[in-house]
Every structure is written in structure tokens, then in C-alpha cells.
Amino acid sequence: MNFLVIGKTPKAYFLSSKLAQEGHLVYLCIEKLDKNYKYDKVIFYDYSNQIEILKFVLKKEINLVIFTENDNELYELGDFLKINEVNVYRVQKELMKICSDLYNQKTFFEEFQIPILNGVFFEKEAPAFSFLKKGNYPVKITAGNDEQSFVTSGFLNSKKCVIDMFNAQYKNILIEENYSGKEVFLYFINDGVSLYLIGEVYEDLNENQIISPVPFLEETLKEKIINNIIIKIAQALNDLCDSEHACIFGVKLLINDGKAYVLRIFEDICQTHFLNVINLLNEKLSDLIISSCNCSLSDDFCEIKFKNKFTITYKSNYNQPDDEMIFKIDNKNYINIEGSTLAWLKSFVKENLVRY
Image 1 (cartoon, rainbow, N blue to C red):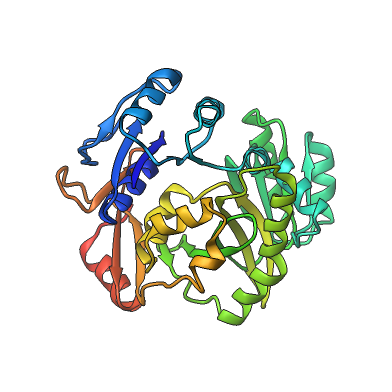
Image 2 (image 1 turned 120 degrees about the vertical axis):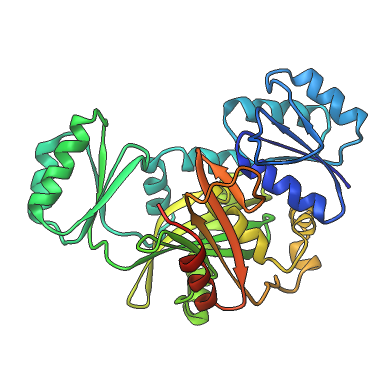
């Protein structure tokens, strides 16, 4: 098949490279490409130049245009292509609205009875202080749209955190109680009828490592999360969307004592998690995307197979400019490596890479 991948971040490059490795003709449309990323079928168009992009799609007989991100500009481009009968794969519009704002997410979770921590939004310091005096610690205090967050374990530290955030001109903060446990990320592909887990990620903040699969997430708990939480989220999204049910979405959860609470929902795979997810799939990503578009996931796949490996994405100051191991996100250097055991990977990282 012929694909055109359109995006604004390195994720578009990673996806283009993956689809090309699977034997497809893949063009990449991106605003700019870091010198570390080498790809020979790159086109540079202003995304507002919809006519020229449509001409390119028709000339190259593109079967599917995939958007790796979606803002208003890219969504308008996608709408234009769809009107002109071009097949488009992108984030659901309703999901994009939900993910755009923490308040929208909390409202969505409450409306569809998704298990979450007790959390309250505050626009002023005084009511936040009153809440913290009676709070169940530890608490997580988040400013803006997840732009800054801290977990605190006492009133004085929490009060200082609130003061600092409002002094930084954030309009509101979210305080979530009983924030104890480990955070995990699960990623799913959905076609409006069926959904499958395609990746899981644990961010080990102490070691500065992004690990897949999650080493402590037991299969029984994972199945419980999917059956009792994720399916409910997918059904809610399907009900909200009139069309374009096909999508990939992510859910961030807090795991504590065998229980799971939803923290956030994501409209796609996070940039720093992308290689972890796609590198452990033992299926062609292109087949999954096409089946999702055709609403045929359950017909085409009995289950999703994964490689029997671990992978770590690691932030590092290892900086050889032509080293193919290095990739950049937000001007930070990352390396992604795979291994048969997590212990071997951690040992390799410790011996060979210098952490920030």
C-alpha cells in the first residue's frame, strides 16, 4: 500500500520508518526533520496548503493518510481530504476534545463511572488550603493542563506547592487524594466494535527509564482492568463519536494494592513511549491500522502477539551526532534498546550510558 504520514513531531518519522520496514511505500509530510532522522521520502508542505497536499495524494495514489498528531490546522486538513474522498486515519474528534483539558477528562470519567481518585479543581488558594487541611495524603497537585505536577505528603509542602503554582500564573490546579502506588500506561487500538491491547509502559522515574512490558503488572489484574475499565471507556468513546471510530488511544492508571484508578486518557501514543510500543509488537502495525479502518480487528486477529522481550527507552547525554541509536524529542537525547531480560537491559544501560 501507499501511505502518507502527516505530523509535527518525531512520532511521524518513527511511524513512517516502521511502515516502510513492513514493505509499504511511505511518504512523510512534516514541517522539519532533525538531522538525526534520515528518511528519503520526505515532503515539506505548509499544512494550510490543502490543495497541494491533495494533488500529491492523488498523484502518488495514496491509499491511506495517517495523522500522528491533531491540532485544529491538521484536523481541517483531514476534513478537506475526507471531503475529497481520501481515506484518513486520525484521532477521534471527541477524544481530542476530551484530552485537550484535564477538566474535560474528569467530567468524562465521572459521567461514565470510570474509577478515579477523589480530585478537586481550585481557582484560588484559600479553598485549596482548606481542602489540604483535611486531605488524605499523599496528594498529587497538578497545574494547568498537566503542565506541572508534584506528589506531596504533608500540608506545609502541599501549601507551598499551591502557592508556587498560582504565583506562576496558572489559572487552576487539580488536587488528587490518596496518590499512592505506581503509574502505568496501556495503549489500545479500537475499531468501534473491538479493541486490543497493543502496548504497556512503565516510567521508572528513579532510574529515568521507560520500560515495556510493565514488569509488575500481573495478567489477572491486566484482564480485570481491560474488562472493567477499558471496555467501558471504549464504549463511551464509540457512543460519543458519530463516525471515525477507528483510533489508537492510551490510558494512564495508578496501580495500588491490586486496584486500578484511571488518571488520564491520551489521544494517541506518547512520543517517548512510541518506540517501546511498536518495537514489541509481533504483528505488522500496518495490518492493525488497516483492520481498524475496516472495522475488522476481531475478524483479522484472534489476539495480538508480542515479542518475548523487554525494551527500555532511556534519556541520555550520549551524544554522537551520527549515531543511529540516538533520537531527539524536545531537544533531549533518547536511546531505545531491546533485550531478552530486564536485568540484562538495566545492566547494559548502567554500564554503557551516562544518565542526565
